[in-house]
Image 1 (cartoon, helix red, strand yellow):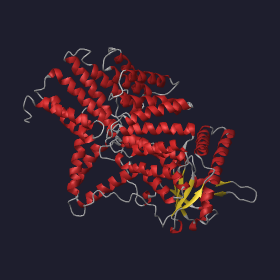
Image 2: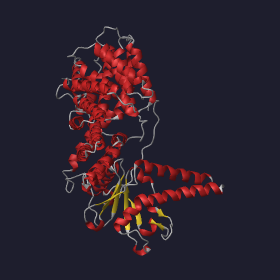
Image 3: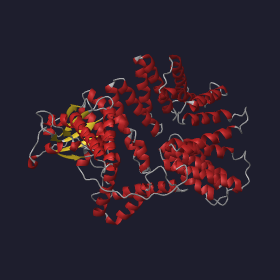
Length: 614
């Protein structure tokens, strides 16, 4: 249709509404197309100004749902401003309060969504207050009441647990919603799933649920899954809930059929491609956690492989660095536990692959990008500046949750991503650049010229995995003294002592106490970590400086905070004092792959101020 036609904004707007309906739970590209079209609808001169606030509201809704689907905090942040814009426009055009109800409800939903993303307490409290006030405007027999109660119950459920009052109120609200809808109502599976989450909340905070309570929430979760149509994007989330319910049943009844059912439902959810990434991610994580806690080591390792398979989905061009960090932050514990499971199953190579795949993701990302710019400047210099400028647009981020997202930012990023993809396709047609940008080697478990010690810290077992010693298979050295609690205690002791040592320089007694505490940590590090490794290598003795072997340490978790290179065996009877510095030349690497190529430095964007939720 001709864009100058008076009918254009209405027809184009209806198309955007269809794109939102189709894409809101499954297809971010449909939402991106709606974001591209909606600003033209809003700005069109033929659009009736009195309905303009509604289309602005639709823009905010698309932004919010896109943010949830793509795990993009920037889109959610921008949506809050767009909803404010819609309300200002509605006020200017004389909309009555009842006419703005849906915009205000959508605004509360967006602020609540921002709370679940950022955990900003003001956003959480304000969204609950707004929902409560808006509920008071709904007549008791209105068909709008049940969906509103569902949204309010979900908001309450996500609040900090505290004394449990919010979770209890959430369950009460959701039970009320169920009384207002029939068995075949489309919203019923959603309300059931949210109720299940409210009912298990006490178990997440130390309360042991009774057998009847566990059986009851399992029945609700089962009904929620069975009444959700196959192919629905919400099915993955409900399978996750059913997995959690069976996990609680296993803890209560110790019936392995419940363990199998929990793992199977988590697996189905993690592999359900129609689900948002965050649902699949949580399900894979829960799969690993549940199987590992039950000692099902093979299953836990397989869950970790699935978790690793989701990592590339967090690395698209439109995913901001902060969002990648938030998505990957939970990955560490799961991968370390998965590596422990693989070692229990005798699969040292798999343990290394799990650790290597999940660590240094952002570092590898930066290294590949820096190498791509260097390659472009060498082989196609005329295109380098354009490539860098587009990358800069996509990489803009202040590195914190206080992200400024001016209206139109997401659309500009989508346009830049499209231009970048077109540029890359053109670059690949040039001589010597068919594989641009070269991804490099994702793993580097074969390092025959170096001896590397990967230290895995897990609540299930901790080990040193020696790679490259003699060019053979990895050597596993169990570290029975190393646990998350013991390492955390040593880290606290070390940094507490260092802090005291810096503040008591004039106090000889205090300084001596701090030195003893540091020496105690270094002795523990020797006994628990360094000595077993050096003994396995035959390097647990003093060596001449000129012939001292080089050893690369690659610790994980809190072990990264201990000075492994300075571990010290104190003098004891016939045993002389011995320091790791006298045995080996120690170096550190975040990953095995990092030894293949030096890391490139990346500029740090400036911080900018934002409003109080951010």
